Length: 430
View 1 (tube, rainbow, N blue to C red):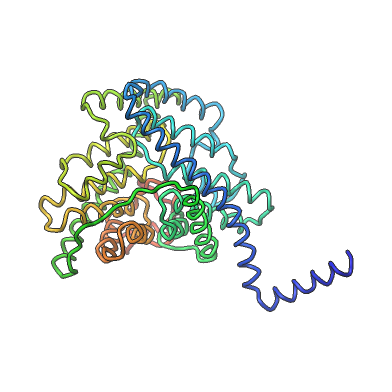
View 2 (view 1 turned 90 degrees about the horizontal axis):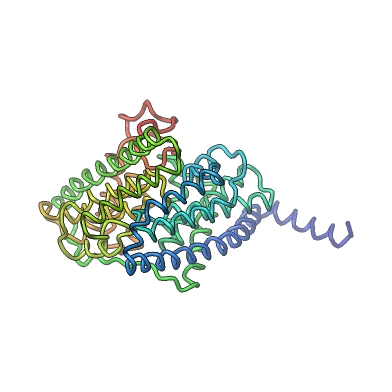
């Protein structure tokens, strides 16, 4: 090594000794910048593709008749080439807890293809699962490329999840906290707090730079906080939490049913596709398939049929438990917003506020992420609703019990003394 290189290395060593935090920040700022460019761009491409897929299906509704065939092809793809990545978000959570083999990059294109196919042909699914899996697969490749330590690999994966969530929904603060909160119920991983926030913020900026539009929501009337409105909010939140638990249990039960009755995996989405396509034909509407964004928007402004949330649960549970790809979160937004809309028939709070509370609270209960969901509501609807959505998310989180759409979650701290015996164990009743 030359004298100049020695001098530079010695100067860097002295700098790190005197300002150790600076080296940490520089390191993770670099890693998160590289990660965010890739994840933000991937999210932008996915959102644009999803918009195209939705418009194609709505303009060519005969495509829904091919949903069973599309499901069979998705099943074949994962059966022959994607068994090691089929666990999806649960694989990401498992890897954070116990890193073993690196997650293969094929997770990203496989889930992208599977999700777009699901939406083109009429399945009821979301987008968060796809964004997280794409981001996680990308992050794992950087962990291997830069030869990160086991701990740094965990942090980068948490950051990738934050980046994927924040960029796909345009909610970087919620994305950061979601990545920190989702894998360990009741605790946050503070050694990943800077990378998680940087990755989520930068990835969201990259997605915005691609000029991809996010859906905008508005709560037109928010009453002054009082004892009665707080009590009404708690009452609504109990319904949100019970619904979140029911959804989590239903999707687990239905998945087990498909596996026990249809032994050949590719045939499960084929059978599920037949059920969903027939249901669409019988109902004569595409309201309950795809993302359901138009119905979510309507739920903030006008009264809808009180059974909308229940039909969306049925369509989504069948679609995802049969083996189609996509996320649960946007369907949970639909379920929560329409449930809140239905509750407005007898709970004296504004329909838009109840829809907004349900939008995030059912999601909070189903994923055990009340802090991230509270921040998401504030980012999407504005800070004026903060007290109401915080009550809704926290109470829903409590009433959802030891249930989750992510069975790989681990309980770091019980929700209350009732769940004390389950502390530190994996969730059992899913």
